[in-house]
Length: 397
Image 1 (cartoon, one colour):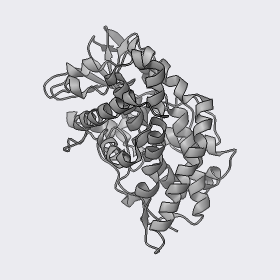
Image 2 (cartoon, rainbow, N blue to C red):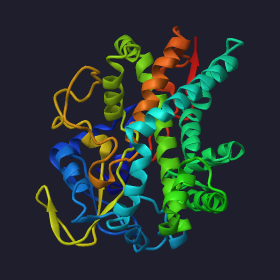
Image 3 (tube, rainbow, N blue to C red):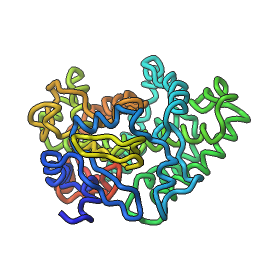
């Protein structure tokens, strides 16, 4: 395998499956050198056991964005720091997460559930209207993207007339292809927008999460911290869930048992969890940096080295259980890593699960003869993106 391939292997797929090279690395060299031009010494971790160990050890491995800023020529600048939880260490991370946790309790999610159901129904109405003439409908545009965007915007209190623009920014956040407007450029644009939103919430707190944080913790949160928290929730809760809604639908429509599981209240939770593991739309976790010399699976890691955990690779590891190369809604296995692990486990994981558990059955009930309008192998999957997805999903019924 060439060095260039090794740089990209964690982002490569064959349809919904990680490329075979990732499984080979997991079996033969689960901690492999990762070439990052002009960057630090880096390592790719592909096994479940080792990825879980890295993600769960915040004392040895740092998430601090400042590490990335020092990563070499062409690296991000301070104004591109996304803030929030994903690239922060304790005690800052501990303080911010404690404030957010109260917004994602079971009670808060139950309060939000009627709105999730209403959003799903609205998007299904739009889908029906788009397909009224019998032509194929792009389910990404009418269903997968708007549902999580509207739910997260509802949660945060983003004005309705500004949501379409932020969806565009969010879609670019995890694009690592180097195209203009993607990656770090999108982070800067996102934070500029959210800075204005935070200023308005400071002046007149609304009923959404941002307004509540201002009222309850305003004196202990800077505008930058508030913008960073909002940015993390919008991007983490929009693009990831949108990709899962689209790609999960691809699998459900291609398998009668998955379709039956989606329509069965007793099985939908298991199906959602298996789809999350199997698809692993977030292909890699936020990078970690070794605080000191250490070892992973016998490989020496130097202080300051970057460590990247492949979630798509780890979630197919037989360490979780047998036959990880297929979806089984009825099995019980070890906890997967689709939402990460440790102190950085996704704070909105239960919200995402609930959206999927509501949206998949509703889609199938509304359109019982729903089918892909093109062969699954002809779908245009998103290349070289931290969040795997599909550009469009033509369906008919």
